[in-house]
Length: 196
Image 1: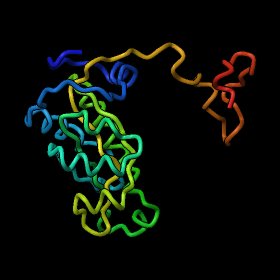
Image 2 (image 1 turned 180 degrees about the vertical axis):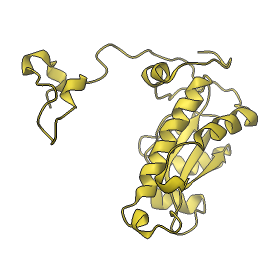
Image 3 (image 1 turned 180 degrees about the horizontal axis):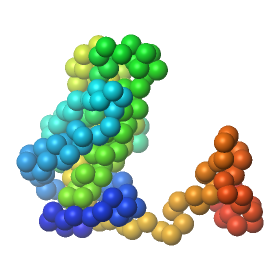
Image 4 (image 1 turned 120 degrees about the vertical axis):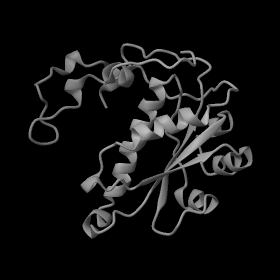
């Protein structure tokens, strides 16, 4: 992938997207970041609450502090920048907050962020974090939380998916309740690595 803007359909974007851990030492322009965020703000959310905020992080000292609370996030230091996805309370709908629906909405907006970036040739990835520590570093107000820090940048190399990178669909789809295969699938048709 190069840095030229190109268009792809949703199917292609989802199937070709890869988590990127090696980045070129190239600045991602602010206008491109804002275009990506302009797209992802249209993500669905409960009662159209849009319970998310984004923090653009380019400061290497800050990224180093955040990396200390991301056990498998060493590549945060390899990226030219990162975006913190923050979720807020859903105003006026107490029940949604009780069931933490805002966090799921945040996961949706983060997934869309990955796809919107990928469409522009920019790599990202989900980094799991110790949220309480990261909230303190980024001075997140009480009641809000960072759900992920996503490194952002142009990938050095993109390895295409292998044919067997994903479990077969009929091994993950059930009818009516968990465990009843839809459609019925003979175990002999499932590769050993997915029989877990």
